[in-house]
Length: 591
Image (cartoon, rainbow, N blue to C red; front, side, top):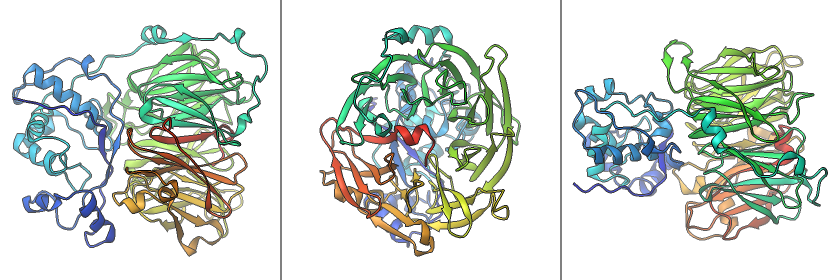
């Protein structure tokens, strides 16, 4: 039997979207995204009242499939060792992001043998081939998997999932490298850069970040990092920059150097998403923390060397059902301004952990029950309340970091994905925070002022309509009157290559569409427009125009006041740009 494993990024489904095929988006989707959709309808697998589900090419799991051993389960179809090796690689590349390494489910449903064996091989093959209205990609009709691979995967998921190895302090220290010790680093700033207006730009598929001078728009340095850097976080002082790749590699970059570069690095696990530093008064720059998807744990490190000091597991019981979960992944982490604490979202259990770092020997962790599945979030304008998205529960959890308790659980739209969200003063409702959604085109606006506007606090006061679903980021700035909403994963190229912008002073007016990808003036490619990010002054907005690794990408900068094109940055070094993090805004939680 010939089995072909193509080198592709993981295709991840985004949610159940009950949109009618008669809509314009559905029509575009059928024409542009899924030419074989009618075959699925004829087969009776998907209903005629649903369009093809939007999906995107996300990063594969960074866990090395070769490190997990073959497991054969009673009652499951036979697999050879070669078949098992190929199947687990396909699963890690295409499926683990939604279903979890252990297949317990998250964005996607659980795929454990007690479920899959009851369905049987024939059913699973149809499901893998045609997908579902609930968000499962049509791997077969889209051509992403061959019929042979479909058959293989249908048999593979009826076996127990192989368990990756653990990753403890010994492995971390083996990977830990201090390139320039603190005592040999500059004692003062050695360059002329306006550090507060530097942008750290993720070059996703290149495994690098580009430091770009926000004043001159010129590249300062391109630094090798882990794969697909997820976030960049400056230290409280602004001197250091921490970046973490999806492969759990952390780089510590010294921005005081004549040419800012990595001074220490460490691998904290097999797959990760989050890094943060201590910000409470008196603890600035002392500690860094990184959370991992695998193993499910977090590690506290020395802030200036990345020496691992304390590891804590996040395995435990889920909110609501109170069932044990072996793979509760660490999502967003923020540093409290009220206490010497890190605030950690644990995705699968739906718990928010408040980790006090005053005494690492007697580590105090306060656990708050919120809702599954916690993902991203950011502060309200006072930086007291952490607004955390429980995306598959369609809720925003409000965590009071001063009182260390849950303030509210707010029902919003389908699968909120705020990034850090957007704070602004609503002309009618006062201070608010907003999130867009993966699963619909709504923008939920939530009141956040329990002192002066108690009647609106912790309620959805507006539900704006954006230009499409599958949004990742929403952004504004205290000096701006604009609210930007991206839709990079929308199935319509017209929608994914543009951005919607609202006038905060006249929200009922609706949005204007800015053709960002058109302004980039680059060659063929997906040209997904992602993550608006302001400069320090709040008068420019930077957008990534994200195409394939071998295609031309760009960064488009617009004048916030006029909403007109100001500058396009491009070049052969600009490979798959995604996240951009302005040092000042990220350091001060300005969004």
